[in-house]
Length: 327
Image 1 (cartoon, rainbow, N blue to C red):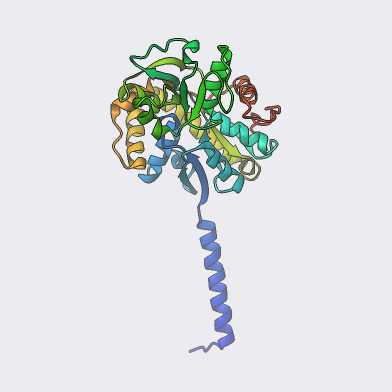
Image 2: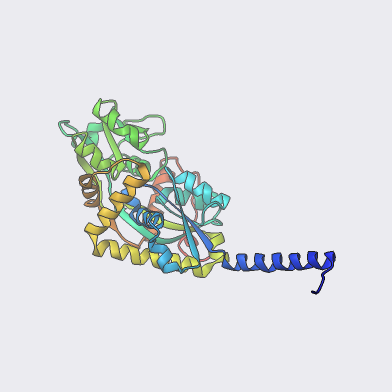
């Protein structure tokens, strides 16, 4: 029997380890990290995340077997944008205002829009029995919005200003009060908020549970978009394009199969929030939403101007790079 020296054994073990490591590295999947909100307005993200949990992911099936998709739920757009900045995620579903803020804050160096996602679903809700019927009726009233500077907060301030009312960050003719969505219903029911400008499914909750009525509905407002980091576009342009294409295909499927899509979103939200979401709530919210992969630069430019007029943006800048789809 041939005998090996200790030195040979060390060299042999090292070679085996090196080859094994190379094999493992070659087999390791590429990871794509995507953010989303557990919300009806983020239907594509909810369906994608639910599919990943069930080992039958929409995006995995279209990105290839070597791809692993990880989903990260967020409660607010600013935190999702900070995760883009930190390199913790590669892309995210988000409202237009956080994306605009991030684009301007980074001087156009960090964020790009891949596609639109959802429109509509935002509304001004007043108590069903109230006499609030026109903008002037809101003098001295308190109107809740989800978060200072978020998409609906900017829209509310712009609408009241456009109707001739003075709105400031600290008061004015009507007091706009940033209030987290989960807190709005109770404050609305007890009269501590005279009205709420928010987004689905909270609009439907205020109507169904709070006995409210919709006074102003933003049917064409951009609610959700899909953005990617510039780093992803630089380092993996093909993957970014595959992500966009999978999202577009899913959006088309949602529109072609609304009942099945609603059930997938309902089940996904129930699993994510660990409480049963009613089908009636999802259906009511769905009726006010339009799912589309289109988003127009002019809409975001107008929104940027409204945010600056409200004192929520210190500066503006051209949005051509935001829509370029290129690093």
